[in-house]
Length: 386
Image 1 (cartoon, helix red, strand yellow):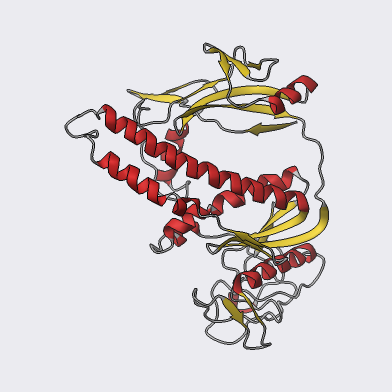
Image 2 (image 1 turned 60 degrees about the horizontal axis):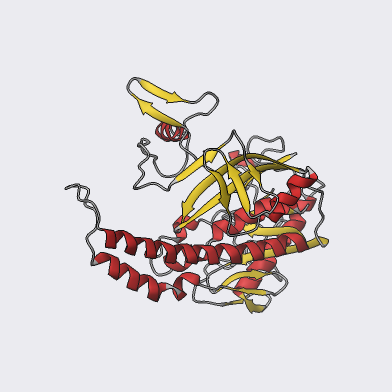
């Protein structure tokens, strides 16, 4: 049995004087994140102390775990506790089919307002049939970028639709319209005007449309990749660091690199494939896919890779995708004997190719193996599979 959750989330506790009160078996996630952040157990930005949920600032949502939760036979209505019979704008035929055949069981239902619309998401426990990709032995490297959303090692280019850029004109007009109206003021406690609320709702619907278009395109791309190829290799990108570039931050955020990798993670498991994540420091763009030589520097403006050793001239994104696909062969043979490593270090050396073969017997820290001389440790593992 496998539990599949579409969307969820609810307030599970509240802070009282003298301690925390929460439901049995439901830990307060906000307090735990705050405590782990203070003690250093949680990585990332510091997490503040949880605040009370506000009906004005927070997203309206409610979750039902008990009571009558079912889909009507007409598949255009659902029955929820305390809310009764609700009409759907979209048909629930896919969920109804699984419920009728007995391959799914509803665990909970979450009603949420997003982009001016009310959505209901069901968390169901399903029996998923074993699937196999159309080409189980196929290996594809996926290099994501801004010019093209994804460049595959097969040479296929996935265009970047840039939904946010296309909607900028309307978003600017709506933003200017909202700024001319009387909005809320926290210090004085001023309530927003009705016109400000209507304008803010129009702006929210415009942003929701951009998010829906982006999500739809990513789902179609990742579903096609997971169903066709048996092994997919992607990079572990430092998206937060990339967003520090103010000239490309908006386009990087619009592309949705993290969402693409998140969808590939579970879709490869659903379809019987595997996902290999290359190390963040692996120089996929600087490495020659022909001879393995690594360039010292490669400017972002250089859109073609020119190897100084073998003379290969290739599009830099396609070259990076080929290097990612080559990592799958190294991962398959790891543990069966010596591997002709690419010699990728954490930082590119000052000059000259670094594509040297690693000696057998070395191991990462904490594992058994022959120790390197003078207290040196072996390079870290450059890829991992999901």
